Length: 130
Image (cartoon, rainbow, N blue to C red; front, side, top):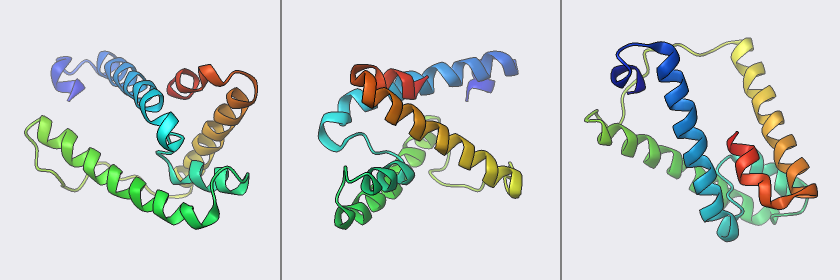
């Protein structure tokens, strides 16, 4: 959507997507953090269970809620812009490089969460969003 709104200027579209995503993520973490710990990612929930922050028996319910939430978010975003709720992507994303980049991103996310939570818990939402 940002590409359409930015007149096909990829740099402006990327900047718009980054600012919107970061701001929304910070707001969601601040909103849902006190309720659920703002566990939007199954890797975060698994890591928290491993650190005894969440009980292992609660972990499947968190993961199921995260998966349904992801599908609900995709459908909502698509419907807001007049698109079908679900359709296949035109971008092929597969292979070892994709798996490695997901590992690096998830590891970085966990480092930010744990590092900020141990030293300055009030900055966690903004650090994760950044």
